[in-house]
Image (tube, rainbow, N blue to C red):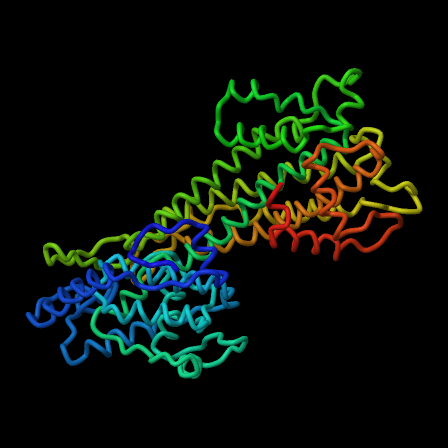
Length: 500
């Protein structure tokens, strides 16, 4: 059981909640802190002080004072008016993470909402009432307004939700789950809307998958090296100690373990005429290691964000002050997701080069053209590299940074925005492509290893080859490979290669 108190959450904890593997409750200490924060807001209302977000309009309309009798209507109108997202809904896992992260932000005790707001979010998470949240419409400041508005719309019993495999009205979903729709009080609508939880949810889950693919790329690269009878000399520990980047050292060590006890290497260790391999083989530690470093940095940013107060204004219980700031701005996430997207595209690029070396008769070492013994009448794996090139092109287009763009909004009041949600969605799409192109390399390299039999590859490579062969048969005659690629991509997502 995970007790929320506004603490920093690990990406592993976030993924566990996304998959429904963890029950979440509000910590007692946080309940008390949130209650005290609410008392500050209630005192402001009782004293008639003018405070942004409590008794004023929003954004460009912040100079409009709202009467006491209209405070509930103000919050309700905010949620309704901002619920104009478009496009496909976020996945159930992404929407579950949004519920978790929004609850944890409020549990920090800076938002001035009642504990019941958090408890309602967690009840929806626990009972599987998952808001329908369109993925398009956020500019990432003042946070993910449109996506979070759709989340809030479900909380108050409007809009739609997924429940027990159905897409139904939120009112029906809450009723069937035995959850009372929330009646918003002063400050609570804006407490639900200001924040970065949509981009953090989408980008965070994409990062988790990206880290898996980056590690598996070592495995696919080692398989390609064995199939091409390459040399592991470039992975010698002393080389990488001389340039001690953490990721580079980790990848080189991983490769040495994967290639341990290789009969293929032993067969040409003494009489290898080559001085060095192509960069796509020789520089695996340098390139894959750099990708790991970029993803590690992005994960650190996401994990900091999970335990941060990202709404506006913030309530400080100790002094009773309420300050308007900009913690909702998604710049930290936007830039890190763009960085991760560029890194993953580079990973795809070096993967495609290895695929080409495996099938290209002008580049491979004593392997049949396009990995078929009937070249000419059969095309073998010719299209595998062509499809990989297509995936790489798409990733390169998507890798253009979203964070460098800016379209001022809200009548110029919000004159610099992050575009963090766009960055997160692009990263997710690039990870999809990376899973597919890694699947292509695994299948292609496995085929290449067949031509080295009866010699066995290194122990880790051998295990990977066995996993591939449980899903994809050897190519004895031309066939459509689409399902094979999709099957291995699915196997990657399900984590079957994770132990390698």
